[in-house]
Amino acid sequence: MKSKIQYITLLAASAGLLAGCASQRQAGSGIRVTPAACVLVPEDGRNADMDVVFHVPENYFTKRSRLVIVPQLVVGDTVKDEYLPLVVDAPIYSKKLKRREVLENYTDTLAAGIRKVDNTSASFELPYNGTVVLPAGVDTARVVAVVSTDGCGECTGIDTIEVASIGRPSLYIQWMEPQFVVRPKVVDGKGEARLAFEINKYDINLGLGNNRSELEAMLETLTPVLKDTLATVNSFTISGMASADGSLAFNTRLAENRANAAKDWVADRLSLTSAQKNVIRIDSRPEGWRPVLDSMTKDGNPDSVKVKDILERFADQNDDVQERHIRRLDCWNTIRDRYLSKDRKVEYTYSYTIKSFTTDDELLDMYAKRPDAFNEPELLKVSTLMQTDAEKIEVYQTILKYFPDSETAKNNLAVLYLRTGNEDAARSMLRQLPGRYPDIEGKRLKVEGAE
Image 1 (spheres, helix red, strand yellow):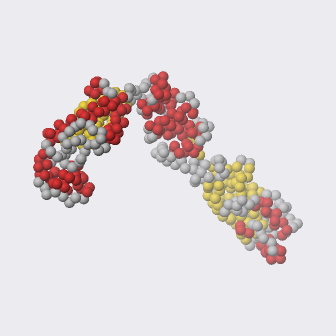
Image 2 (image 1 turned 120 degrees about the vertical axis):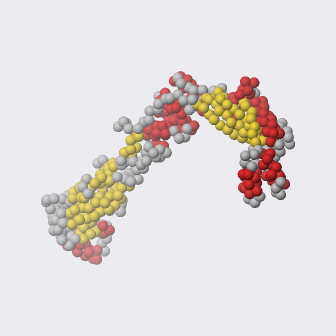
Image 3 (image 1 turned 90 degrees about the horizontal axis):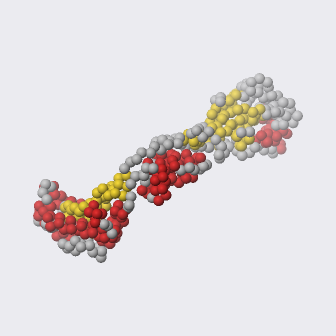
């Protein structure tokens, strides 16, 4: 419905039809618009549907006239856009226009919007529906209708009717002031390495299987735990898993020795002191036949039903009892060759506490050195110690790097982005907080208290 044509300037094209006609603008009430005091709210931030009715009073224009209503978008005192006009031709005007089209091959530039009335002395209504588009960066505007009722497009003055106001609703973003509370920074973790050993041996051989890569991965995980000067180890256990095949007592001792070998390898690589090595506890436990059953089931082996039955019937017995019955199965050779693991699992669990930072000087000093050693409350406290918006933005971005779910960081980062003119980045932050801001689309973002 929208058109870039400046329709008011085209009214003069009708001048030749009724040259010299007299202006017949009637006194009394003018055109009304309903709904009155219409407020349009853009649904997506820029586009708003306008659905109004123009009420034309009786005797508003003569039988020799053309009524033209041109909606315009006004921002401040400037017309920014015009939309498809409403055009109403009185009977005599319509006849003269038709005659000119036939005799002079005349093209009426307003033909698309023409409506005809037979009786100009009676009142009538003109529904109007269209889409109004706010220019980029504009939050408020008005829609007015410029009205002409002359017969020639030149003789008569132009009336202006207030049709609607347009405004994007505002969403106010409130700064969340962090409250600093000292909390213990306890870190718990676990991992595993699958190591290959020679039969009944526990020496570490980096050339066997994937031992080198498995141990390097284990070392990479444990280095921050054992070498971080800010960390105090609360507990550290390396557990060897006893094989299901063979004597439980023998395998348990062997698993413990293998776990101890892994401990010694790590201690040697990290140059741990005797005191540090004493923190590490060695343990072992039977792996059991459950992994064998899981492998057979995953493989679709029908004999897995037999193994499952044995494990359920002798669930209260140890691995040796279960093994005796499994070895009697016709499928034992297949189980031994295909489903018994060729490597042994070594598990490690740990817990350590990172030193807390409490004073302002300590927080700022350690933030420059070790932001990774901070918990969320400490980083939020650092943000309050920064002086400029740019410094605060950097801290909040760091918080989200280590704590991506921080609601305070996202909220305050959005406020800072708005302060610095980056509304797109602010909106991106707020979209990640649907619980706090469920309906941000189409709304103008403002910082509470900034106006």
